[in-house]
Length: 308
Image (cartoon, rainbow, N blue to C red; front, side, top):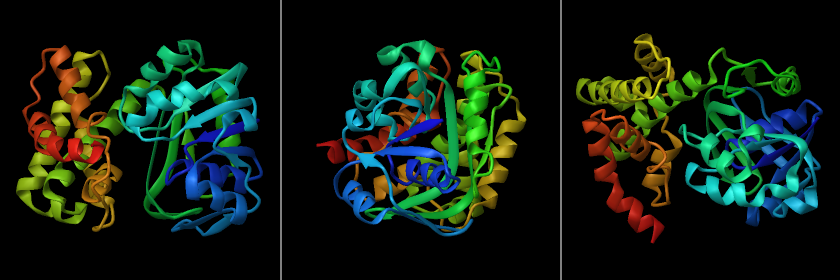
């Protein structure tokens, strides 16, 4: 199975690197100094699950140079999805399928609009990692996982093939959930709350969970997303909030969501795809989202400055 990683940064680089480490046929779409480092020195990953280096690495900023693959794992930022979809065509053959690993819940529909719904699976992943430098990824915390499946939840040969590709990969848990839509929304519920509250307070997760005021704010934000998801027909149970808070409690004290790190650095962030999406989807379903509306409005001026 030939797998393309579209977006070889902190997320795509980690999972693609683990696949390559296990001997899978992996190619990377990257750009700039990161691409040059991958070509010249390979991919270095420092991880709490074990350090490793992949040399050589097949990488390009031109998908046409890489050719057709069996599967594409898209790991760009949520706001880059439309741009990525417009450049994926050279990687796609008659049986190629695409798995988005971005934060949020809108990527499958965005990719389907551009490339056809029959090619798109649902997907999500989790880990705390950063691009420490060109060609160098640092995995800082949280057990890495990747989850994917058909959007109608049927078992398929192509999803099983991708699952088999991840079997034996060190430092990765991979699975096909019974309900991929619910799995994506549970991740969405967690990450939007953590990102938004972290972005406004500019505090790491250890402080957010220790103070009753910010802990309550995170829980309220999660419950809003839970209500929005249910209004859109997603099977989310009440325990999802408790489980998500347990995940937050297990994170390293200094942990921050990637959106929060982008905000602190003055970079464009996933605000529209996270808190903004909760507000939009809530409005569409006539569900009030006062916490996410506050978080979105508070962070929007900086987001607009970063994009300018």
